[in-house]
Image 1 (spheres, rainbow over the protein chains, first blue to last red):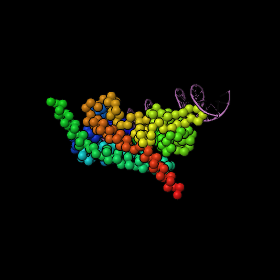
Image 2: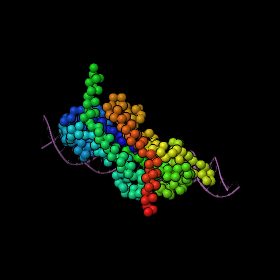
Image 3: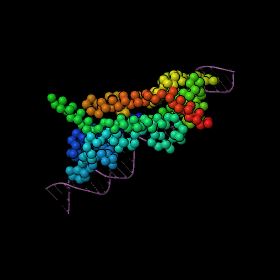
Image 4: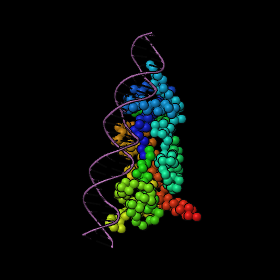
Length: 142
Length: 142
DNA sequence: TAAAACAAGATAACATTTATCCTAATTATG
DNA sequence: CATAATTAGGATAAATGTTATCTTGTTTTA
């Protein structure tokens, strides 16, 4: 019922890139800035890349940058990039996983909840979060 | 991000008891009727008992019955009885689990989502589900 | 007192999570 | 063109969580 630590790390990373969108950033820098194990983060970034959330540049001066605007990346996008499709019960996504889906009266509830859940998570984007972080840093400098 | 199979089993079991509330039922009967491994279900019923969702009677003619009206038992109640407090990120429930909760701008989002999530799950009760099952059986007899 | 049923702890197989490490492949730069 | 910097991807492994099973004890009815 919880997101994994991996997903939490992915969010920190996307947030980091969202604060200066357009700018490329090395794994090492993000790992240090956000307290994420470097080699683990490298793996996570591959998943974010496959989901078209970040893009990568190899070689000297390489690194990662957002592939889309922060306002076009939601919590849901990042969660699904890492953990796969969101749903509360496997049967809402794969009916074959439960032999009773056909006549189970709980099944339709899982389907409704899945939609509500996705809507909920789709409402938060990384522009919002980056703005929050920008304001917070400004306040602390005073 | 998913409920466990154990929780799914717990729901089947509470639903089974909700169809004839007031009536006591043996582990063996519920296990067979709902396709749940017997010894596993016995464990699950202990958790449901601790959460005051079912009550138990020992000895010959013993068994389990609901401790409350089906309309007073929500999906949330059963999920929390089995898996503990619902939240999407551990930090929403235990700030010490993350060293950054204090200045993390994502943290407040987890807190909001947790509340929304609990509200969502609290809206479905077992009277509704039992009614659905009753109607479905009636229809199939025709 | 015997049989039926729940109670509770120990244990174990399996899957998932959370990483780490090593070897490519790619690219900028002197 | 050689070298250093950086991502890409596969193999591996420790720790944790899930999904059970089994055994022994306790309670209750008849």
